[in-house]
Image (tube, rainbow, N blue to C red):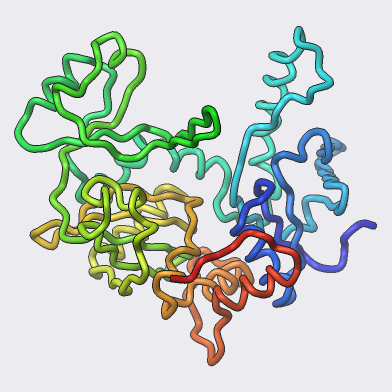
Length: 360
């Protein structure tokens, strides 16, 4: 049956994505028509057809459960994206060709749903994920960043690391290794001249090298349009927190809300505008001189944990309002009974969600 009665919210996601499950259910309960399109389903379980006629193009998509066209979609929440995998039925001699075709279509799909409100546009999200580009734009809007070198030159790297002070290394992208039942992922790491590998390995891939910033505390700030909610993270109390608070985040029971200085708030908005994104999670270090040092903005980062750590921040209600209004200049409208994350999670659980969410 084709869905025609109301503009829908399309959630681009992955199977098992917790955010998509909880907020998809919440939006449905609030009256939105929600269509979820999981990346794993294309091309074997879903199809996209684009018929070009005189003066226009007709886009039709089938996910098995839903059949819709481009004009049926009012909002696209680009929650999680992944390049399609070559189906197993393809002969090994043809797999590279098919992968190239799927790659081309994956990038082309970002230009669909031209009249919809995107969170965030595919092309803009790709550019935002490029740390080199992101840091350049952050400097342009006046945000303070750590002293940084991104390079694969062994000579440049060694000279940088041998300078005054401590230094850290970060990858340009995140990665997870799964070997013999164990999982290892990339975190910020301390680096010294003695810890650097041989030159051939340094030259093999670029990395982000930065001066280590002494931390008073850290802040995670989530923006939806012009609204934000954020928490103060006392990273110095966490194991590994002097490098990366995510290493010891299991020890966080609660966080206080934090308020952005007015100047930093407007610089964040300026950065989002230049990156052409309408939502993003900002990471800052507040140094010993109370300067806000920008680390990165994640345009599709997780944000539910903020409300679990500080339940006075109405992120769940705000995000639902953000999608319902589809306004890049969104301002949160307080309500007498805002939807809480706990309520949204319990509702999703009653509807079959099996993943557990821990409230400290």
